[in-house]
Image 1 (cartoon, rainbow, N blue to C red):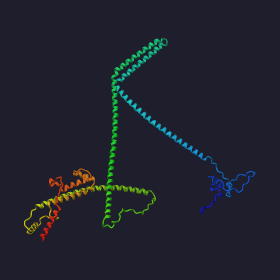
Image 2: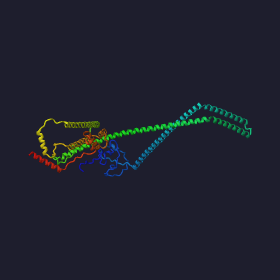
Image 3: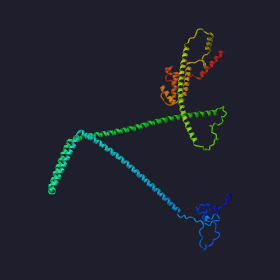
Amino acid sequence: MAGVPPNQGCFTCGSLHHWSRECPQRSHGFRPPATRANAIPTSTPLLALPAPNVAPAPAVNQAASGSAGHSAFSYQPRPRTNWWKDNQEQLDKVYNKFMEDEEKERRCQELEEKDRVKKEEETKRSEWKKERERLKAEISAKLDKRFEELGLKQKETQESKGLSDEVTRLRKENEELLRKIGGVASNYEVDDELARLKRKNEELRKRRSRASTSQDEDCVSRLQKEICELRKQVGSKQVESDEIFVLKQELGELKQSAYMKTNFEQEIVGLRREVDSLRRMNERAMEETKQWKDEALRPGNKRGSVVVDTPAISNRGNPKPRWTKSMKDDNRWKEEYKKLQGLHRVANAQAELLKEKRATAEVKRMEAEGQVKELEEKMSRLKAAEAGNERVGGGTNLKDRLEAMALGSARRGKKAMPGRGSSKEDQVSNEVNDRFQFVEEQKKQLRNLKKTRLELMCKEAGIRTEKVDQMVCELAEFRVEQAFGPIWAKDPASKGKQPVHVVEDDSEQRDVDTSEEGDERSVEL
């Protein structure tokens, strides 16, 4: 194969049967072969001679012979019997030891946890016992104090002392009797003495019980009543503490609900702002598309047959990502981007404020325009009234009068020409047209306002708040009535009715027009 260098064998001894790393003549010692690939020489020996009978020569260190000729050292592979099995057994032992240690550690942790729980329970139990003993001591102190106030404690001490003295006296008598008897008296006499002593003891007990019952009945009843009152007080305190705890929980829930309500209202306001911004963006996009479409479909446009498309980005950029020198620049750009975002939010808030101010200014301007129009209408009405009341001065013009008579005699009907003369119906129709134009202008201006501003205007005008279109129509009608006055103001009979204009047939109008034209021609001739 071309380009492959020939095998030169070992670099140390020059043998072709092993590599340099497995050479026995290496300077730092012999290294056994890792595999059996190069352990046995592949070539046959040159000559096989029988072993001589002489004594074997001493072993010669092959490593010290240098690199003169090929070495006759025979490589014997290292036995590796059951190596995999032994290795696997060692791994199993290590794994078993590891699992035992983990199990032992887990058991120790469980025991520690149990001990901790027991200690906690014991501490709680001891605290409960201490609290109970403290309460008992307090109650006993209160009862002792009460007994001292009632004077029962001294009597009890005196009675107990008397009883103890009596018991000691009886014991002494019994001991003396036993000494006197000394085993000489018969059993019958001993039994009689014991019965007599028992009877005395019973009589003493009965006396004590009678005296104690007769004197302590009232005290016991009082003490029982006091104990009941104390129990009631303790129960009332517990109930009050429970009520306070419940009230605290209710206050916390109310605070949390109020906080959630404020957050919810803030989220609603933010969503409304986003919806308004998206609506404005959509309107702008629609206007742009409409402009492009109108421009494309315009008959005089040279690009009428060209398909108009949105501008695309050029593909001259390099899409391959490049590694920057350090990450500090990225962090700096991120900080600048965050600053720009904050400035953008501030700018949006300022824009919203400016829009609101502009809307309020627009409403004020519209109100001022309405007031100006009302004043102009009032001035025009006053001028018309003054012009109708003026008197015609003295003197006559015969020429004008003759021409007027000639024209009046020649014309039998009125010619429908603009500016010829205005009748009452023409004035009504003009007024209706003016009202309609004013209503359309007001609707156009009111549609540019927000719903909140429209609701405020409706409240000021006394109109019920409904949908946006309905509020716009009602506000426009309200302003028309303020500007022109109600329709039924001049004619009360037409209140709540729409004005109706009667138009004559076209054929009659055409005949009148032709007759008037013929009369004019005859007069001119």
